[in-house]
Amino acid sequence: MVGSKNNGDMQDNVRVAAENSYHFNPNVVTINAGTNDCTGNIDIPNAGARMKNLIQTILGQPGWDRTTIILSTLIPSANGDTEAPRGSVNDQYRNLVKDMQADGVRIVLADMDPPVAGNGWLSYPTDYGDLVHPNDQGYAKMAYVWWAAINKARNDGLLQPPNISKIDEDCHKKPGDGVSAGGLTQQVNGLDDGIYYHSSVGMGSVFDFSSNFDRGQWFFAKLFSRDRDDLVGWVDQPDGTVVYAVYKNNGGGFPRFTKIDDMTVHDNCLISEVNFVDINGDGLDDFVCIAKDGEAFASINNGPSSGSSPTFTSIGSIKISEPGYDQSNIRLADIDGDGRADYCASNAAGDISCWRNGGIRDLNGVRFVDINGDGRDD
Image (tube, rainbow, N blue to C red; front, side):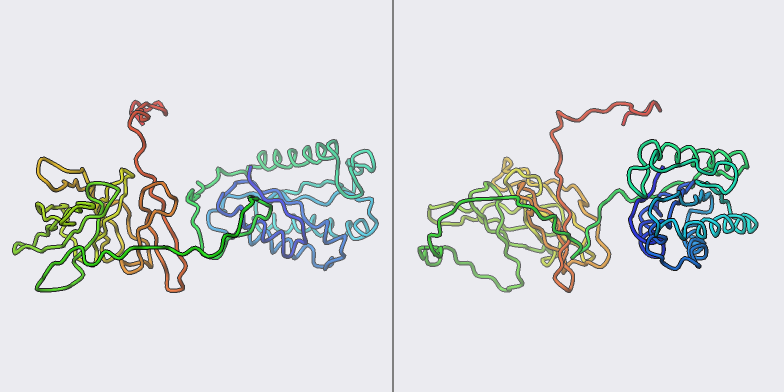
């Protein structure tokens, strides 16, 4: 059973609440609505027409062609304002069910207070917790009426197997849809010690290099240690392949950078697509190529080999492109502090959506077992 519960008048709030269940495609929908309309004397002469509009809206949703409606009348109330128009609303509901049945709609009446046999099934104060709402005993009596109506629908051949629900299990964020939950989450004591001023010591030029062209081909990357950045230069070969000239950072020594063997990342990525970031949390920068459409391809830094430069292993695509975001919109950054770069996209308004890098868990925790009895390990 699926559904939505909401306080409010039938014309607005109930219809909005019903939208929360549209994606479930149920084969039975129970409706009990109109009590607040009676209390507020809201458009009583058109209660039946408004209920018909609500039902038609529900049945008009995609995948709801197999749905049966169980519409209830309103239970008695000890509130005089609610009770006065209730009889009129119930008569309109009874006539509505007859008319819609004649039109071929799968609909059954659950009469909570029939005018003939069964009248007084719920009585005040025995079955009520207040002037309007039932207590547990009253709700049990209502449940019996619902159950009897559903059984009638089944016996009349009105119940159909439901359509398969198509529920997107991803929770897609939309910029600006956050809601403040309120409440105090942190309380700290602190001392205002004034404005922080960062001190630094000028080191002068630590490295010089001459090139016949300048096209943004230089990158800093932690190739050997998380402690310092090395210098990497993009170089295209005559055969169309790309290698990277590597200048290892010697730390406090001199010279600061030393040219070592060239390295390959097994990806002929253009300069504008190159990123060196840590994607597996080992402290070494890996290689990520962001294609024109925003898709990300990666090669893992294996650390130094028998040669002096690190080796890389291509792992192919790690993130497919997102509609509306091309290469110019994409940035790689560790937004959750787990040591792995995440994939973020910014739109023209500056709103940013990110996809977390979940990494690869410890292989010791991985098991392959048949969990659904089909003979194949999951």
